[in-house]
Length: 119
Image (cartoon, rainbow, N blue to C red):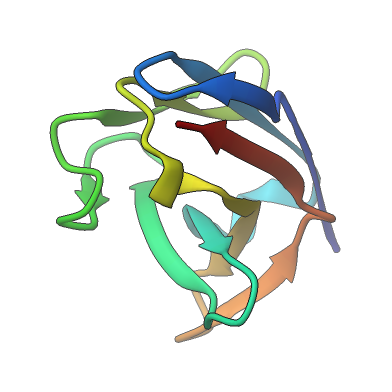
């Protein structure tokens, strides 16, 4: 079992920054990738960024490339999403998920954290 707990969401104005945290615990040895997703009202959940558990590789959706940065703190087993130059369209509930080595999909999810960006 893997547990993920997100934090760091909030209400900000356009152009400001937020840093989301995803604390990962439990059986982390089987994790291959940790990703940040978001879901806006009435829309499907979309992948924003992911990082391999080793930290060697990252991916970003085009919509956030150049503004968001995903990193991992090995000592704290925490994955961060630094979000700069936020836009109103970034408003969503942000979730982190863990994909296992033995799985093709994301198996474990956090409870989500709300990000709201006002114009």
